[in-house]
Image (cartoon, rainbow, N blue to C red):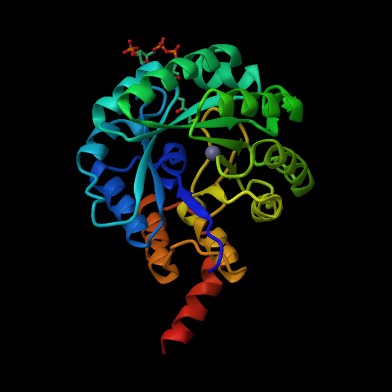
Length: 304
Ligand code: COA
Ligand code: ZN
């Protein structure tokens, strides 16, 4: 049996939070449903953040109230920046939350008006509550490789945060290259070291394709044993609070590469392309990744 890689599509959150066009709840739900229909196992469906800070994520409680993903092998995740986010996510029925941690104080301040240490203290409190509430917690470390405010991140700082939150009982810890600045050599070194210390089961990576190194970074992490990746349908994405951040590595690209390499992803590529088309239609800006044009021609030939 071939080895599996778990893809989390963060397009409906990381993708939509940075679009000039704000989608309606119905449009957001249609995009989430299309991604689920393509067999993507996990979807970050929205965030519980201040609607003044991120207007595109207002009404994520309505997304949870109307998700209807029961027919699909897909679970939903809510991103949260603080305790209020946890409370709102739990009240809305989220079963998995992604809490944002930081490898720099500059980013922690800009994103969540906290220091790194304050975000960690809140996360420890959230982990306690989540255990009682039966909610899974993913700890995502923003600017794990470089910060737009504080410059290059010392790998030892990121390693220390990972260490603390694996030990604190996070269900997963994800290294996020928020501004797409990492190169494959850095990724290989950091992920290999972390896998050696902690094993790969709880570790994941989140890459942006800002400098065209997204897939190369995915490959470097795969070589280290990482089997969990965030990506975004049609390459939507970017952080409104991190200057220079552009789209995530496209789910279209990562699914094609991993499947061609023989990994099981559970993703149906023709259906994924439909979801990608929808993302492009709804937002009017998604680039669609690089694989899509080739896949469209190739899959049509196979079908005829
Ligand atoms: N969800 C919804 N509203 C929230 C919230 C949350 N998780 N956290 C705080 N708020 C509200 C407060 O109720 C308050 O509302 P009011 O102005 O109507 O009274 C307002 O936001 C400011 O609250 P405060 O605690 O003073 O916030 P802050 O200024 O210390 O922190 C954040 C600002 C973190 C709340 C805000 O910048 C935010 O939500 N950022 C989102 C970050 C993000 O999504 N980044 C991209 C993904 S990593
Ligand atoms: Zn991101």
